[in-house]
Structure formats: C-alpha cells, structure tokens
Amino acid sequence: MLAQITFFFLAAIMLGSAILVITRRNAVHSAVWLIVTLFSVGGVYLMQQAEFLLAVQIIVYVGGIMVLFLFVIMLVNLDVTAKQTQFSRQWPLGLATVLVLSLELAWGFYHEVRSGFRLPEVAPTITAAGNTQAVGLALYRNYMLPVEVASILLLVAMVGAVVMAKKKLD
Image (cartoon, rainbow, N blue to C red):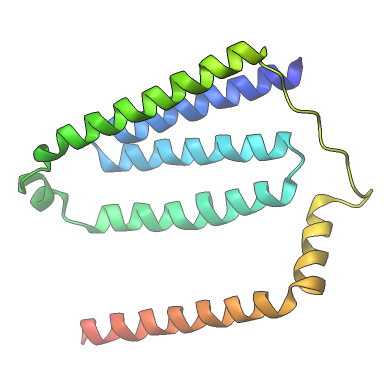
C-alpha cells in the first residue's frame, strides 16, 4: 500500500512539473521544473529497485544535460527571440494532437476499468547481487565491444564539436 501511495505521489509530482515545464514563459523556470520532473522519474526508478538507472538519471540528465540546458538558455539572447514571430499557425495541429492523445487515454482507461485495474505481478529477483553490479557485469562481460565502439564514436563526436567551435571563434 505504501508503495502505491509513493508511486502516485511521484506520478503527481511528475505530471504537475511536466505541465509547468511547458506552461512557464521564463525559460529558466521551465528548466528548473524539468529538473524536478527528472528527479521524480529517478524516484520511480528507485521504487523499481533500479539503482543504476537512478544514478544515471541523476548524474547524466539532471547533472549534465540540465546544466548544459541552463548554460544555453542563459547564453541565448532571449530579447531577440521574444521579438521574433511565434508559431501561432500550428494551433490546429496541436489541437488535433491533443484530441488524438485524449481519445487514446480514454480508450485505455475504458479497457482498464473493464478488466478491473489488474496490476502486474512483481518480477522475481534474479540474483542476490545488486542491480548496479549486474549491469556492470553485463556491459563489460557480454557487451564490451559495443560499449567500446560507442565510447569511440562519442569521443570522435566530441573532438569534432570542439574543432568546429574553435573554427567559429577564430
């Protein structure tokens, strides 16, 4: 019962902060609400005993990506963007999308009410070792080559971005 209350509490925080992300006029406030949303997602990962995903969520998304977003927001001249024309012609497309998603949500709720809101069974724990240890063993034992190829590709992309930024500054 406590787990369900905690989940619904985190889900309410996620939903509320996600709505605040897209409704705030100040870009810095939107970024802060996105941080709250990402922390709530991390809480759900922790409830599912996915400690590794929680750590990655906090370190990579909240720590790295959001700091990058905040720097970009603060470096962009927002006065110029406020004076530019807005995308007001896309309201019909947005309303159509909201209508389709609302119909999908209503259809899902209708079928769940008919089936009695059955919750899935809890997945059994496979090993006594921690989740983070299992992910580490899988990455560096079974998938070592793809991990190393991905790291080399990321390194090449980072060096390319630095070279391109250096050319723009000169």
